[in-house]
Length: 144
Image (tube, rainbow, N blue to C red; front, side, top):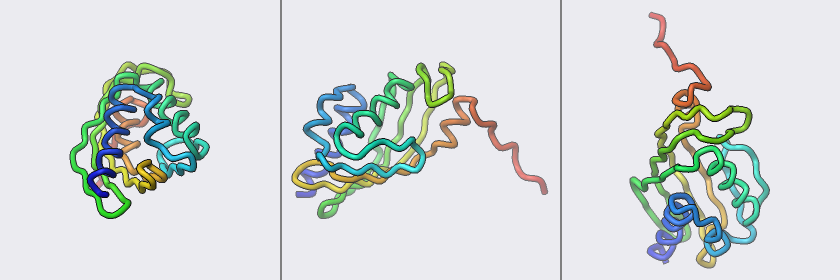
């Protein structure tokens, strides 16, 4: 089962995010899906909520590309360490497009049920992304 779960989790990154096939969400995400991501705005649970989440980021970063750096699966859980790159070409909350490029790393832990992602927890470098976009100043170093 772990091989099948890894394939489903990988398809979310490859088909939905990299290939922009939002219709694949219906096949990959469970109807009762729950999304945990403290760095992102809150979206409703379920398939439609995940579609809103994807649309939010694809609007801001239409060329976003995820590279899977590592993938580990055990029982019903899959953990993926990833790198995302892209350009800020659309609104991101109140931040107007900057045209700047970004590269951030993150980890997604997904729980699968009946061949679909039922719940996921995400942790990624949102501060680093906002610094790269020029929305937050970078730290200048510490005083001695």
